[in-house]
Image 1 (cartoon, rainbow, N blue to C red):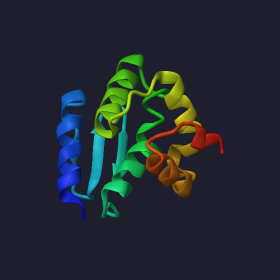
Image 2 (image 1 turned 30 degrees about the vertical axis):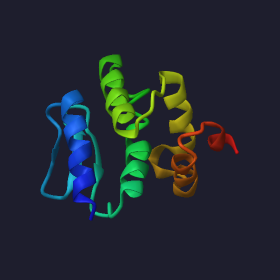
Image 3 (image 1 turned 90 degrees about the vertical axis):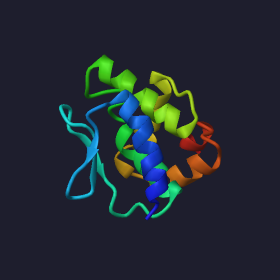
Image 4 (image 1 turned 45 degrees about the horizontal axis):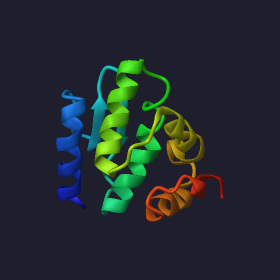
Amino acid sequence: MEIVEIQKFMRILQKHSPKCFINHNFELIVEPKNNIYFRLEDVKTELVLKCKVLAWMSRPSCKGVSEYWQKRIRAALNEYLGTNFTFEEMEEIYTYLGNDCNRQKTIRFICSDYNLDVLTA
């Protein structure tokens, strides 16, 4: 398990979502009130954590929660990944990668240094 990477992500996340925590089921509760979370049990590498961040945080970064939380989730995601995705770019990312619908494409996207052209290829 990539504990160091999870800790790094948690430090970033806490700046944008101070009530985040990891529960007894090893779920990362990103924002409790809006029920934004994902499981950490299979996170063994930095790549897997980045896949999960894109898969499960892309939706709340552009829809489903208030604009306030969209901005905060997007800021945390961007800070962790070292990106600067806009609202519109996050909508596209969610369309192609959200809910972990295409893990292989997510891996290609990450390995391409987040080249958006990979999404539609």
